[in-house]
Amino acid sequence: MASYREEKDTLGVVRVPENAYYGAQTQRALENSPIGDLKMPLALIRALALIKRCAAEVNERLGLLEKRISDAVAAAAGEVMEGKLDEQFVLGVFQTGSGTSTNMNLNEVIASRANELLTGRKGGKSPVHPNDHVNLGQSSNDTVPSAIHIGALTAIRRQLVPALRALHQALAAKAAEFADVRKIGRTHLQDAVPMTLGQEFSGYARQVELGIERLAATEPRLVELALGGTAVGTGVNAHPEFAAHTIAGIARETGIAFRRAGSPFEAQAARDAAVEASGALKTIAVSLIKIANDIRWLGSGPRCGLGEIFIPSLQPGSSIMPGKVNPVVPEAVLQVAAQVIGNDATITVCGQAGNFELNVMMPVLAHNLLESINLLAAAAAVFAEKCVRGISANREACAAFIERSLALSTGLVPRIGYDRAAEVAQKAYDRGQTIREVLTAEAILPKEEIDRLLDI
Image 1 (cartoon, rainbow, N blue to C red):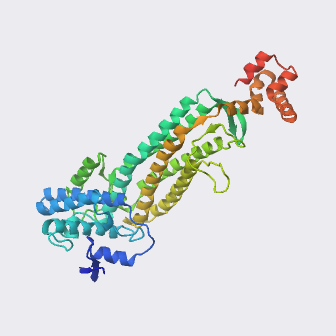
Image 2 (image 1 turned 60 degrees about the horizontal axis):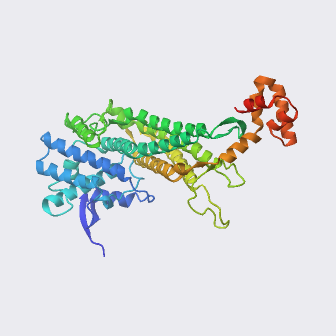
Image 3 (image 1 turned 180 degrees about the horizontal axis):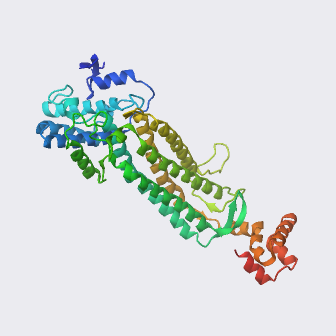
């Protein structure tokens, strides 16, 4: 049978599980916001813990915390950052819009663990108090926006960009490998003039490269942190030097040049930087849809589709049709992209919830933004490793499509004019012949010139 301890908060006494490091405020939030199973992302929790650790160290240097308190808070926050207390973060995404519940969950866990380090007993508010010590110089209203930026930019740099670079390199390598593979181009899903498979793949590689550039373009806004603004941006109850020193510590820890926001009032009331970053993520998702769909179509078959490329066979593709192998990785990528586009719509709505001095939809914004980053990173890595690197060209199919294409008549236009070239194409279509066969049969041009003109 579970055992409980009683703790007080501003609303009275509440029962908290004995094995919990969190306290009364977290328990009350847990009991009163039971909407869905989505938990707050651990990346956000760890970014908040980094803020708490740096804040404790700065507050000790500023003479606002005893060293033993600061050291215990910093040690407990470090354990949170290392994932040692993950099970203590029990609150769902759909909570108070400022993220206060999660901020207090963290404050209570850190205080409880710090007290255990100092006294051997978890819980309580002495000698370490969750508000007076762990949250000193802070408010949920400036720490949560800061943690969103820290968590998002850290994940972009450490997870998403490396995965996109790997995908770009894989696509660029295929562009080089297929540089001499001539194939038919297509516009409006109809035959167009010839090109190379390498040129086609170079377009995909450039899309991914531009996605990386779009992410980089969001950094000047994401490095701005609201920290130091406390309740509404005025910095009430924070030491004048607190923000600058704490943000400097965060920058040293992450290796990212975070800085104080140019306007704390913008940084707390608006989530425009997150909306902008989500827009870049959505654009990358749209790029991946284009690339994944093209690869699916180019590899369609094996005998009744386009079949211009071979993609790796990874698993049986049908429960009823023996021997069928589906393009599972491109299809998984398409679904990730759909999720990211949906997340962006939610983030857009969240960005509109900056009412006066505070945005009040930050938890769901944080969840969706961090999920989009993680999903795109995973999708790009799998796409590169399990699909793109294993693609090979079906040179015979590519050559056959070119020879059968009526669009080869385009190469005749400078020599015989548009109308006569169109007449040749129509005859080829009506007779079931190739352009070359019509030109040869009707002796319209010498063979050597035909070969030269059709090699476009």
